[in-house]
Image 1 (tube, helix red, strand yellow):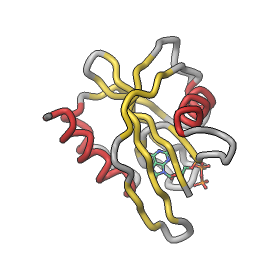
Image 2 (cartoon, helix red, strand yellow; image 1 turned 90 degrees about the vertical axis):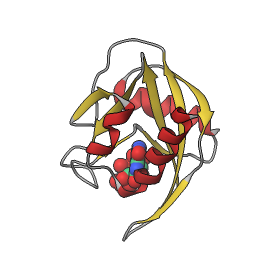
Image 3 (cartoon, helix red, strand yellow; image 1 turned 90 degrees about the horizontal axis):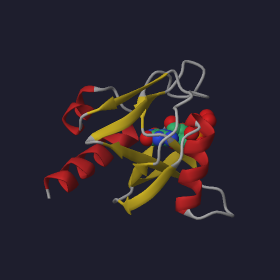
Image 4 (cartoon, rainbow, N blue to C red; image 1 turned 180 degrees about the vertical axis):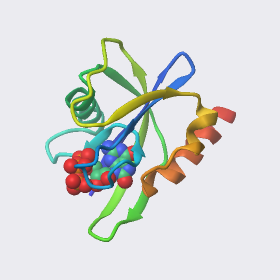
Length: 128
Ligand SMILES: Nc1nc2c([nH]c(=O)n2[C@@H]2O[C@H](COP(=O)(O)OP(=O)(O)OP(=O)(O)O)[C@@H](O)[C@H]2O)c(=O)[nH]1
């Protein structure tokens, strides 16, 4: 299944979210996003999912290299986009917590396994 995730940037920081105990992959960190519906574009999916989860508005910017990961019950193709934060207050509607962190701190969180190569790709992009 195709899953879109947003690396949302603001003032040099990145927004990360922690999955709640009731979700699959409980307490792991991820980039907000979700499953691509057949009727929508990748960008539409990102805007919709992030609004549904956090009630904020974002603009997708750059598509990064997707990463595939085989979980016991599903194969996830994780498609990352860098996104601009357009403002408004964050309301957590599904997640346990969120944090704005420096890119250098990303590696110190416990991520969904599919995100590990995505973080590597993002850090390489920043390094130019
Ligand atoms: N949004 C998001 N999902 C991710 C990331 N990494 C990753 O493995 N996933 C997985 O991709 C799927 C996204 O599904 P979803 O957000 O639309 O719905 P969900 O958690 O209710 O799905 P699920 O209950 O089937 O696991 C989940 O299985 C989630 O664990 C990520 O960085 N962001």
